[in-house]
Image 1 (cartoon, rainbow, N blue to C red):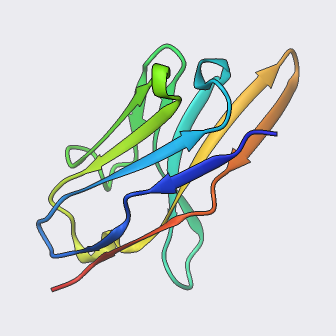
Image 2 (cartoon, rainbow, N blue to C red):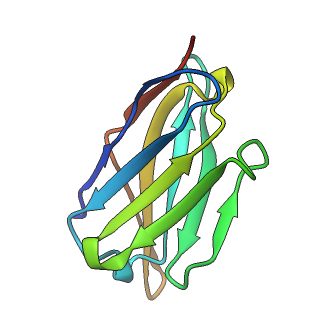
Length: 119
């Protein structure tokens, strides 16, 4: 079982920045992809960004140009740099990891970290 622990959330003013971290209990090199999702109150959990084991990145349209996902394999940590934050970015942010072993897929989730954008 892989444990994912998020950190870095908090309260920030509109236009501000935050960097989220996701520390994994296992080598993230073994993960096919890692990413971030978010869930606002009363809404479904939505995709934010992902990064593959080869370093390819992908973003939701709503965060493209403002958020950057990266990984540090030596630290088994994935980051989400969030700039120009808006009130609609307020949500609980969850780290996600996906691993394939032959034809079996495993998904792992962190416990979430709250991001609140408000003046």
